[in-house]
Length: 396
Picture (cartoon, rainbow, N blue to C red):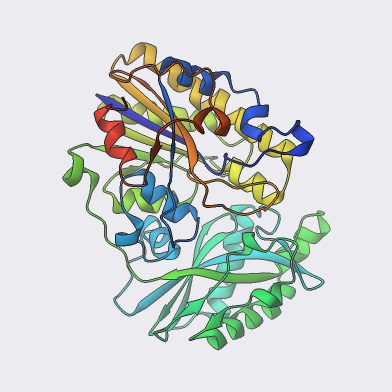
């Protein structure tokens, strides 16, 4: 058997008035996801266990069969694994977003989806001027980076993700709890440096948003997972533009296939992702392909961009895998979002999300389309049973 899980991050949504009270998934042209539904089984899955925040970290762990209530320790340690950062027992890693703050508002949680080249120069500048034996900055992709503290105070510290406060007064959401003074002071020092950064001056001259500040969140200590090989005797790869999903792949013992030009946004290098996935399936049992764009456009609150992201995912990823299925007869495909990211909220939601599965050994349940509505009357799976059911194919 060969297995492929195709994740359109944040695709699920609420009905939207401007779309005739349809969700973006219902409204978008998605013939390939509909075809998977017609050939196989549709259902819904609760990827966010009760009591946990609906982040992509929790949700993607769930999809791969890891119970976040047992394993989850924070977002940043997962990304550290992707970046090859070895966390010591006394280290605490934080996600470090480059953001644009303007007139007291979180104007842009991604600093205008800052290009990785610009971002790396900024992070290196911060490391040179603020880094020490106790604080280190590590460059990631686009606006997503890490800051690691040694001997950070133990205790409860609440840090709000910047994408949760788009358009809101950011001072209402600064870190609160043990160590808040350390984080806030570092953010203030970074603001002074970034206000005089040559990279930001250049970005402004080009009409781009500057990275005015850093925003720290998603903190946690090192994480270890049992490999998928040890749990299910399967080998595989992960294909994603974002360090979070790559990090889960590393921790799960999967190969991480890096695709040049994969941006985590619209018009990413879909062709490169598909080629990497096909190469993985030629020698391995399993591939996990993650596309970030539906989530990013949801955080922006853009209906049209989200529809575009969903249609790009359907055409350039799902459609290509249906072609693979003609060649790889024992290929089983599952498509789903990791969580919902409603346009109206501009952030994640805990609601169950729809999935569709087709391929060898999967019975046809007479579904006609793939959407939240078509899945609503179907069987509900919890966060740790769907993956095992997918491998076994016993959806009946």
